[in-house]
Length: 269
Image (cartoon, rainbow, N blue to C red; front, side):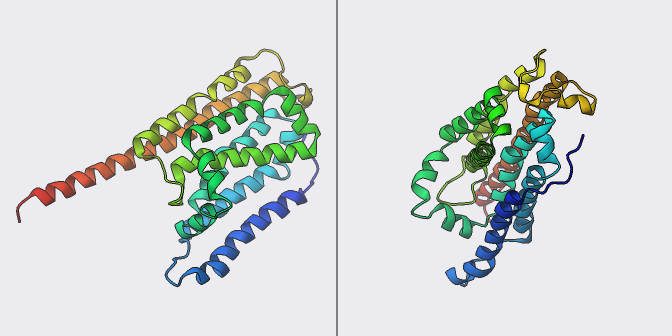
């Protein structure tokens, strides 16, 4: 059954501060950097707050309560939003001047530039997805508030690292070139299928902490974790492959445009 209304004030506070900080930096601090520094576009404002809003929806009542008390499939959907949906939208909402100031800060750039390297980001994200879905870790996350917050903070951070080689808005952390970007996204769509397969094809409950709560929704614990595996495998893969498709078509369009420019330059006037 759906838990009674229970707003998570810590979520409201943290995400509210992030949303306020985005507005304050762009409306109050940015104009003092340089009169020619442009503000974020309307689209960037929408991307950032859409990503932040989705994280809030999946981190607050009732989805969060269902994820932690009743259904592991909802728990998986929550993690997918925290890592694969919210972070890229928020990165797309950062303008280059703000991103350069933020990621290029002397206290941030030395360690972020190392963690955002494709191999490092790939390893952190995929190992994190495996470890945070280990039965003992899930049990700790559900029963310990501090551990729960720590795991979610790590998942969000690993999501930012995952997407920086693809969507970095800062010149201090350059994006991969399109061919390497395609390979990077493809590999990230393959590795999570291993833990997802264990969830999808297992015939025994892997998460005792969820017990029989799923029965209240008309499904068994095994069915619940099967759905979770499908969300992880199909949902995550489709999202990454959608980005692969967009990257491919944009790359092809850019190549075609450069070919036409070169042809025009070679054509006598």
